Length: 414
Ligand code: NDP
Ligand code: GDP
Image (spheres, rainbow, N blue to C red):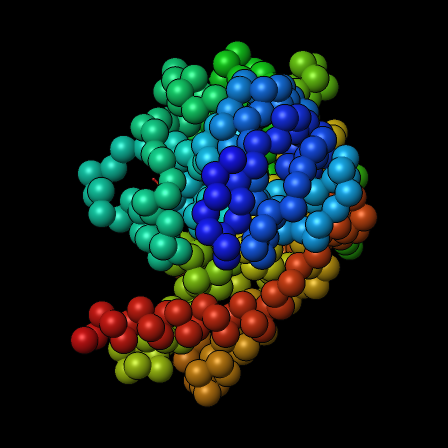
């Protein structure tokens, strides 16, 4: 035992700590009050500590256990415990970590105490690769491993190196419009690439939990007014067809091999980190440029399409919750509200004190060969089973995006 002075915690050795749940709940077999400690702090040697999958907590480890909990009787459970030294941290591998969702998911997992690894495809422009991670201030906290979804061996190698307990497949050619110009590439990356990832997980890390980023675009020409997990699919673009393949291969691997593989059918979600080619970000960027006198017009496509838009920060929480469930499953993640592109334009321009009718004009170049007219999700299952609900409204999100784009353009003008 090491005495650290009157106002410092006393370090004690606990003879027996057993980790009972993956959420770090431990029971304390023997303890003594820490003198002067505002939090309960122990230094403990865990001889046997096994997580639910036998991976995370295995082995003998020297750890510091910090419990933010009032003094409890012997044998009682400590609900909020974090392991401060290495060895017990959960490991996640994210493909698509440089994208919008990858960045927010990495931020969430880091805050949950994970070691986060990302699969990074080579680019000649190294400085733009970590742009979103830099924006969130976490680029030095994630570890990158070279790899590409088209190259199964690179994914297998990454899995061997990382030994993750959770794998999130977010990588894709994700822009619907581009999928008509590069249909085969979209099929290979968005469809077969997902198959490569889940096959590599099956071969190299079969105990790892797997998340597939499926899309509301799979509903396409909708069969039900509100789309839920049981709504039939009718894809309307090469992107949506590729996503459907990836979705069903995820379901198939779960059913064939008993893998913990979940598919999140996510409706459109946006943020200041959304790619500039997507409609919300195109509009908020346009609003900022028009407000600052850098442009006057904003050429747009179909203003009558409606989407169920949420915030990416809310949606990555749903991804993570899916992998914390005892059983893998498929979930629709949506807000349950649909808004037209026209109304979204009105909201965005109003954020800067502008009237969209003075600036938005329809340009045929932005119309699509086949359109998805309406999307409206039913997030009932995610609410019931995951306890998930969106926290950020469309109006709040658009205001945040307009503000971020104003900041970006002002800093470029200096
Ligand atoms: P982004 O387009 O922002 O990110 C896509 C990511 O995939 C990038 O990191 C990109 O890397 C990576 N990538 C592309 N091709 C490859 C490849 N061959 N090998 C390895 N990595 C590759 O997408 P989002 O973050 O918005 O979306 C995440 C996932 O969720 C995607 O699969 C998307 O289709 C899906 N989805 C998104 C929705 C949304 O509204 N955002 C809705 C429903 C589903 P690089 O930076 O090098 O280009
Ligand atoms: P998607 O739902 O994945 O295709 O996401 P997008 O943000 O690319 O498009 C959402 C909707 O906005 C679609 O119905 C588009 O046709 C419509 N839209 C209208 N004008 C534009 C535009 O200028 N750019 C984009 N990307 N979409 C537009």
